[in-house]
Amino acid sequence: MDKKQVERYRILKLLKELSTKVGRGTEFVSLYIPPGRPLGDVSANLREEYGTANNIKSRTTRKNVLDALESIQQRLKLFREVPPNGLVMFCGAVPQGEAAGSEKTEIFVLEPPKPVPFYLYRCDSRFYLDPLLASLSDEKAVGLIALGRDEAGIGVVSGKDLRVLDVMTSGVPGKVRVGGQSARRYQRVLEQLVHEFFVRVAERANKEFVEMPNLQGIFVGGPGPTKEDFIKEGLLDYRLKDKIIDIIDLGYSGEEGLRELVNKIAPKLKDVSYAEEIETFEELKQALFEHPESVALGQQEVDKAFKQGNVKKLLISEAFDVPFLLMKCDKCDYEIFVRASERPDKCPACEGGLTIVKEESGLDHYLDLALEVGADILVFSAHSESGEQFLRSYSGIAAFI
Ligand SMILES: [Zn+2]
Image 1 (tube, rainbow, N blue to C red):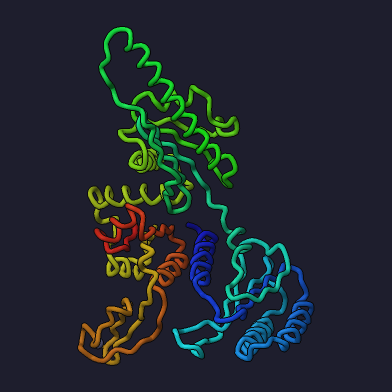
Image 2 (image 1 turned 90 degrees about the vertical axis):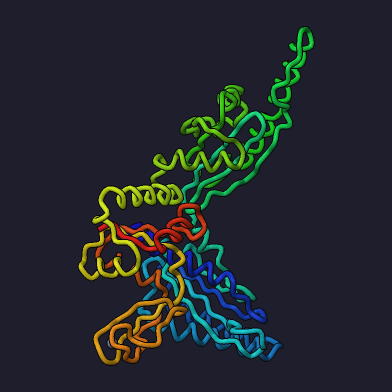
């Protein structure tokens, strides 16, 4: 990941968080400001909305919307002009617990990585995230078909996920010994059944892939010659035929086959981070075996490597995206950065008291360190196969040094 990708990753993370927030009334304000819009115009529009909001019947909703509008106006004052890509603000009274009255006005201000295309003010019970999400979703996708005589899996790799779109079974019986005349007839029936299965698979693949945004290509795999027969029949949409990148021999078909296929094509998918994860994980295991001195493993070693300024690439699990505390000993110089849930009572060095210096997400902390020294970054998903292994076997953090 470069700086831009980290930025994008952080915004997506924030959007994910925002998407879980729901207001008690229609009181969450979303504001999209395109580049070049004079701030005076924005303020004037907000004053108008303030006037409209004054007529809201529910007393709490009215108060919450007015509070949100005031917070937004306050924040806008910190800007001399709208930033180059525009500005997006979300503000609302977010419930902090079950009880009514627990709401706290929260505001989120974003300078998006791509220009905001329009001006929009919206007040709803949820934040309006779609335009931002759409502008961020340029993640490349690769289509997968894992096909055998008995079953077929259709999937897509994009970003960090393998998504299984469908698994279909053919109902074609396995090899049966039939003698003489009926053997040929039986063979024809089987062929017909296989053909019908191919038609179904092709229809499904066409439906999924023809209009899929950012589809980079398709890999077709499976055991035996079935996959080649499938392609020869020419049932795939003409727009997809040119997109077939390669045909791969597999031991399995269906869902199992999709997973096998992703593992086999990983080296060819540089730009798809799911594949990058698999590849980097292999690289890590190999380096540990061949040049263990080129790897810092675990939080302590990675911290040390950052202090010495020799991190080339940081590998970190999404599981680090939880609150961490930077704590300092009151007596000696001891400093510790630790999960809030594993907070120690006393200084491990001298048993003195510890003071919290800072609280932040462990993931953010390490991403910042890596960006500072210009190190390469790979964030492992907490749910992918290699991501889970990385977390289990290597505690979710390592670095190439
Ligand atoms: Zn101490």
